[in-house]
Image (cartoon, rainbow, N blue to C red; front, side, top):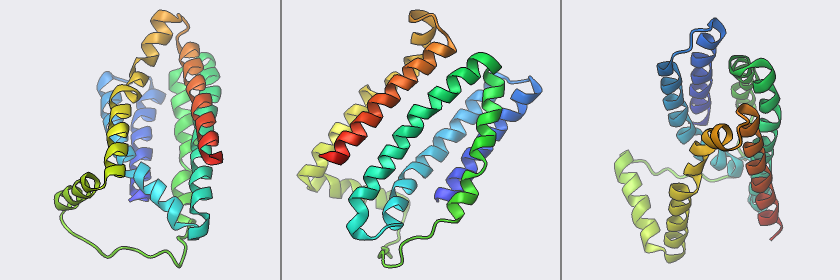
Length: 202
C-alpha cells in the first residue's frame, strides 16, 4: 500500500511538473494533481507509520516512533528553508520540477526496506466498510481511545485547516508572497520539531 501510494504521489508530481516545464499550467492541472496527492497521502501516511513498527523489534518501538516523528518534522523544517529561496529566485515552475526530481528516489528506497521477521501479522480480512465500522465500534468502546480520537478530530477540523490560509496571510497580511509563505511554514516546522522532541523525552 505504501509503495503504490508513493508511486501515485510521484505520478501526481510528474503530472504537474510536465505542464510546468512546458509553461502551460492550467488551474485544472493543479486541482487534478492536488486531488490525486490527497488520495495518495491518505494511503501512504498510515502505511508509513505502520512500517515504522514493522521494521524494528518490539523493545525499540517507542524510540522508533520518536525518531520517525523527529525525521518527519525535520523535513517540515528543511522543506520551507529550501523551497522558499527556490520559489523566490527560480519561480514556482522550477521549484516544482526540482521537487519532483528529488522525490523520484523514494520508491526504490522503500523497496530496500525489509520488515522485522518476528513481527506478527493479522490474518483478518473482510469488506472495507465492515472493517472500518468494526474499528469505529472498538474506539467507541474504549474510553481512553474515544477521547483521544475526539481530540484528534477537533484538532484536524479546527487547527490543521489553518494551513489553507497561509498563502493568503503571506500575500495579504505579510505582503511577502512566496518568501512570507516560506517563513510561515518554517515557523510551523520549528514548532512541530520542538513538540516531537518534547514528546519523545517525556
